[in-house]
Length: 491
Ligand SMILES: NC(=O)c1ccc[n+]([C@@H]2O[C@H](COP(=O)([O-])OP(=O)(O)OC[C@H]3O[C@@H](n4cnc5c(N)ncnc54)[C@H](O)[C@@H]3O)[C@@H](O)[C@H]2O)c1
Ligand SMILES: O=C[C@H](O)CS(=O)(=O)O
Image 1 (cartoon, rainbow, N blue to C red):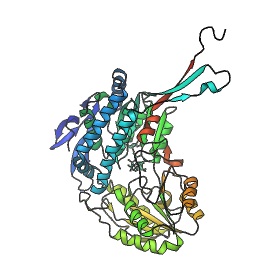
Image 2: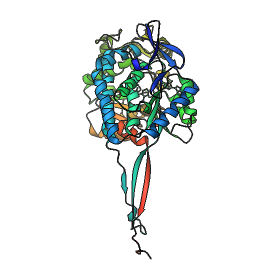
Image 3: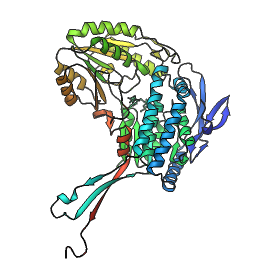
Image 4: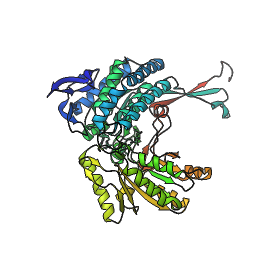
């Protein structure tokens, strides 16, 4: 799938994608080659932005925001047309993403379908941006006053996205920003910029003001220039905790939403349906090669079912089909790069050297790390206490539910957790006591609904995503208080 409008030239038979600034594709710095993550074949050349390009993009977005304000209905029409555009190109988008990310076809179909729904949800929310009536008259002395609050767009929003769900997460940034009435400058991850360019081409084709979205490609350096630019009113970032901390430190008093990493715990209690828990966890620990912030990473299994769970789990893992992500039957494909796979393999070896037992996997072929299961792990091992972001899962036995909650909470992160139990008392305890932004009961931590407030506590970030909640973050609340005293009334 080619983003024709984003193309500035051809080179070696491949498109050269420019930056998308002020409604046209423009040349940036020397293009970088983006490769197919499984075959290694070249896909396209993509220009990167200079600091001047960042300035140009922000100025163009600001001009478009000022000169072409969109009514809520116009925003609704634009974004619903974009949702239809995504649905109509589902298969093409899936194929592009499979090549660009290396994520298996079956997981990528889910990404594209969710992107469609996220776009549609944002379109619908554009018509529901209300405010609040404030009971100012309830304070003695203010009986003749009435108050209300309205939501107004901020101006230019900065969006920075990671490599792992590049299409869906670009939709989660762009769609609410536009639905809220803002303009946005988006920077995709350097490993996966093409799908964002294609998405923006789709939005442009759907008829909104092209200057409302600018795309600047590049890595951390371009991200840093974005942080330093005073023209941004808000930063919406998804990525690692390390980059998130830099963003928070670099944006001063400006608002940020940070969707960061996790080391997702999943508790399986003895009253749960063990067979179902095994099936779900064995799939969700390895989908997207474990490169999802809510991937099942730490499994805590109740002692009475521990042996049965482990046996069934390992059996299931051995049946996973590993290899070519283009094959619809493949469960586990390559990681984003060989370097990332080497890093995860090293962590596994280190854990084994420290006493962990390897029950499956642990071997690597290029960027493909076999689905890996470890037990006898300790909290201080990297595979437990850090975000592994790879097809690696640890299984630990617990005796009491208190112990399970404590182990799950023993993490700097707090994005989502999973719990398998039939007991409502345990569900409610976990809901209160687990220090996580989301708890998924009788499904894995990896489930995400695109309409709920999604985000983390502790080291997993700040703010909430999901169109309705992102729109709240991407608007200012202006309070109006009107004195209704009539002429002569208070003389
Ligand atoms: N919480 C969530 O919703 C969520 C979703 C997806 C991924 N993630 C997290 O993303 C990480 C994996 O993605 P990644 O490797 O692309 O993350 P990353 O932090 O390396 O990069 C993410 C984006 O930030 C940019 N960036 C890097 N350093 C920057 C800086 N100093 N200033 C500004 N921008 C900077 C990158 O170029 C990229 O566009 C994992 O930690 C994962 O948990 C979180
Ligand atoms: O990587 C973490 C993401 O939140 C996964 S998802 O795109 O939201 O499913």
